[in-house]
Image (tube, rainbow, N blue to C red; front, side, top):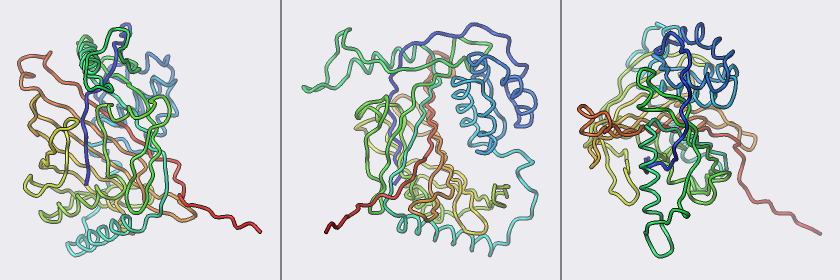
Length: 391
């Protein structure tokens, strides 16, 4: 079952970039970005390019292949991070018309056969995956004001757990997590929300006996602090797919469109699951109760094999004490070699979450931060014990 824990991010204040001459447009199609923005960004200083990207919005979804090509044109690390956030923000939009062939939909019987094949492939994924381990790299972003980051840090420091329970910390004992400001998201009002890169986190994911095993993060985050970074997802290795198919089949899936994939046409279906049928679990705070909201999304299925290559899950309007919560999750799957055999496994994911305060319409300062995670799954290796018999 999918879980979406939601904790406050901890971050410190960061310096704002000086005003620079902006690009002419901020809302761009894929074609406009590639023809007008990308060449100019490539020639910019890294810090300025990141500043420009922070204020941009794509009006169409960028595919993994396009995003990889764009990354190669970025002048440095800051602009690369800002581009990741820009592409991820478009993950729930439609592809451009050039990548959506105007082919007639399959017959109703063919659609049913394809969905049945997809369900069979999910069962195979759940029960036939070998024991393995892989790297899950999560890049954490937040769209917020500097004041909101400061308030989050004060709240976290005031309730830092100790051996004797929860107690305030002294000034010389406060915790601070690294972050970088990439730029304001609204050039006309730079004093409002800004895009912050919080940090990268690398986890070693172990899949054993048909389930994902909890593990400890490696790298800069240290031992066990990763769960405090605002937004986390689980279930990408099959449970999310099974949950959506079981819920959606009760209500029914509807044909949407064809997409042009790297290896051929991809069939896209849409679904809508009401609250009374939902098994999508969201936890909006550590130790708080679970919620099962209504949700909707898309399934992108390989026409030949029935493998699900992309799934989106979107819920909105789930009531919280702070306001209504919107959450969106995307997982992209692809062929991965493990132990000399090829399996369909997660390769990329996006998670976005935001609480809409009840006072937002009247008070801009009441707006809540937006949390964004980019996840990549790499380094798949067979997990097995070896026995050496010595004479």
